[in-house]
Length: 198
Image (cartoon, rainbow, N blue to C red):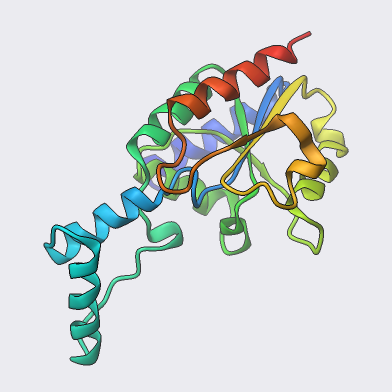
């Protein structure tokens, strides 16, 4: 195992020993990976100043059989502001449960490794179940599990309200997918978690 893997395992073990007081249910696309950072990565890779120019070059490369990177999912750039605010929450003792579709192709360990490589140093406590329920119901189902019994404060951070807001109400912090998790969303997360403190 690498030093990074040992560090992630130690962080995970430490998280498991703690009582979960504050918890954030975290989506990735539109929250940590914004359209803005994806556009910037695409432009940087193709050496263009606009996304439109980059997509034209992409099509030329594809037709010529040349390598075309995919800027999506775990291959995406993380928004620096989102990383900063999530790391700040982690430093305040907040734990994270991933609700993103990324959980369908990753393990907690592999996603932790990706986070660490991209500067996101947050403890992933768990994933919500992948099933046919709406995301909001998956969150409520997770909260009913025994491991969540000591959770005193929680919120959901997502860029979509459909299938969530009707289940979690005002505990949803809705982000703009173009900019991701910004200072306004961070402040709202803090307010929601503080309002629930015993």
